[in-house]
Image 1 (cartoon, rainbow, N blue to C red):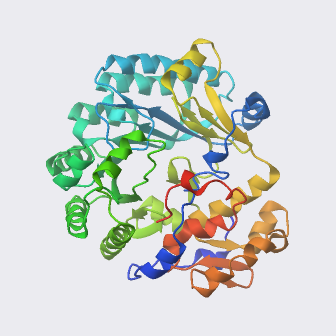
Image 2: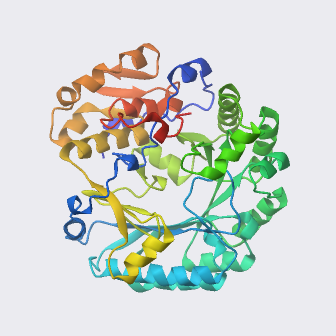
Length: 471
C-alpha cells in the first residue's frame, strides 16, 4: 500500500461538488483509459521479445500470488451499432459449444504452465454477451473452471448480463457457478435512442432482470450507461437516469461513447445520419449524470464509476486498496490476470499478452497446440515505475512521494522532476494540489483524472485518435 496514514483519512469526493465545465472544455483531449500502462496501443506482435513461457514461469514461481481470471464470451444475437467490443454476431447456439471446446484447450495449455496451488480470487465473464450461452453451456463453463483452478472461498465471481437475453434459468446457472455480482448493459432507456443504436430494450426487461437477480441473492448489481449516444438530449437522459435509479443499483458505470469508426465500421452510420450530440451537448450529458448520481448519494469512485458509500468499491477507494486492470476498477489488488478467449488480455508483473482477435486465428493456434497469443509487451523498468505511479493516481487520486520512493527504490521527486514540473498549469487551474511530499487531485479535477495521469505517461506520442475522449 502506498498511502500514508493521514492520506488514508482523506474524505471521498463531496457529493455536493459541481463540475467546472469550462475547465473540462479547456483540458479535454483524447487519452488512454489506463486499464494498463503502457496502454494496449503500444503492444507489438514481436512475440520473441515477450519470452512468454519464461514470464509465465516466473509468475508461477510462488503459490502465494493470487489469480484473477477472465473469460471473453464474444457472441451476440444482433449488433449494437455503438459497440466497440470484439464480438461474433450469430443466433446459432452451437457456436458456443465449439467455443467452449476452444476455451477448454486454452485453459488446459495454461494449466500445464501454472502453479496448481495458486488461488483464484476473482473471475469475470465478459463479452459479447455471456448470457448468449444457454444455462447448460454456462454449467459446462463453470465445470471447466472448477476442474482446472482452486477458488478462494471468498472469490468474487461476476458476469455481464444482457437483460434482453436473460431467463430465470440463466440466473440459476450463474448462481450455481458462484456469481454474485452482475453488470447489466442498459445504456439508455429512451426508445428513440435505442432504435438509433440498434438495441431495443424496454424498461420492463431491466426491471425483470433486477427482480430475478435480487430474488436469487445477488449481492451487487451494476448498471452500464453511455452518454454521447445518437439522439440523446438532457431531457431524455434525465428520464433514463430516473428509470435506472428507481431500480436501486449498487454501482453504475457511465461511459462516454467512444466514436472510433476506423476500428468499428458500424459506427459510421451515426455520421451518415448526423445523429451524434455536439461536444457541448455531450459534456452537458456527463454533467447531468454526475449531478444526479452524486445527489442520489453515490460516490464518484473515479473516471466513469459510481458506487454506494458502503459498496466494496467505494470502501476500497477510501482505504487506498483500489486496483485497476483490463476489466476496470477492482478490489482484488496484487493478482495476476489470466484471460481466456479471443482478443482477451492477460497481465503479469513482467508482461502483457493478448490473444488473437479473429476467431479463426484464435482457433487455429489452439488446434496447433500453442497458446493463442497474437501480441503483447514486455515491461521495462521505467514502464513498471510509471505503471505504479499512474495506477495510484487512477485509484487513489493522490501520490505520496515518500511512499513511492520506498516502493520503487528511487528518489521519486528527482526521478520524476520533469513530470512534476509539467503540472504547473494543472496546479494553477485547481485540478491538482501539490504540498510537501504529496500530490492530490482535487474534487474539481477528478473528471480530468486521465489528463493528470498523462503527465506521467511516456507513451503520449501515440496518435491522439487511437484513444477515446477523456470526458
